[in-house]
Length: 468
Image (cartoon, rainbow, N blue to C red; front, side, top):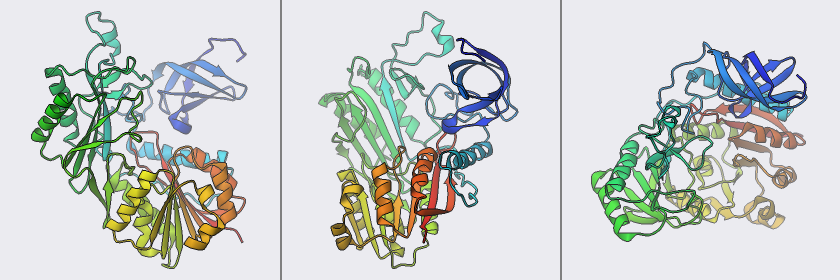
């Protein structure tokens, strides 16, 4: 293909998916990666990056659509950054996700694998999220046909999600299918009231404007938490808007507001204020109850979280005498879920607020044999710590997408627990970590789960045992 620029390849058959949802095709022995295609499509691609064994390209046109394609059910699909795979039947999504786990563990991990269990799909493929955050912006994302019309300006108030890859414009969402009602009614009513009362919507470039975000959490217990985020304090507007929302939606059990004067949307270092209700909600997994506040982390798909934790419990094969360390324990949900079948639980988490939540959740569920500690595992797990808490028989690790640090992997090898269960939301970083752990550990089970239908994301649970 040479090194000349502006290389266009025609009539490429897309043959499969690679990591992060990119599609791939082959041309003269070289793998070409691309987005916005489906296996079975015949495409014309302009190369944007051209290496010896692989290249990346942009799809210019699709001359023949794959027989696998179906009609997306959301009119915002392809524009909003929420879902990427609505054009694929759900059974095909699961097939490609299963393959992604297999390829990551084989190619990146170079691991000796048992037979990978069939992926566990989500019972609900729409309205499965318990939490959503919508953005209010004074810049609306314009569709291609609108861009050509000089009468239409992007300077319009919008409520929805950021357009994919565009930080300063928001897709004005009519109906989002990711969460049950009253989510759409609440988002749209806040927008309607704000426009009627001439409330300024946030301008992310200029860092000005009053109305910024709303977070909505729906629990299977029936409790609903809404947190409205403002760019600065205007007590008169804030009180009038929140009173209106509380009156119109009496189903809201906890209504909060947060003042966010920062450039980013993160709430971790902010202080949500309770306007009405108790300031938190209670969610349930099996018989276990969990207190979830506006800053708490809780698995986003409640029904699948229950299945995920049941999977961990099944693979743990606990006898009742074990000491279990739950790393990246967050608000303590996995460990508490297993608490009936173990002798001692030790939860470790970097974020002190999450540890306080975990302690409250343990008390709420009458789990008296649990200790929760804030800090870095690699620094906490000393001989003195083991003397106090006991050495772990089982370690559960559920890290963020970046996976575990090299220091932590080294610490796990040093501790040498009989069993490790590694829960991951990124098979690529999991495979890298498992490769390092294979120095002392053998994989006994691999169980993929789908927590997020119509997206590229995949959860994977791996069980390891110490080689003797």
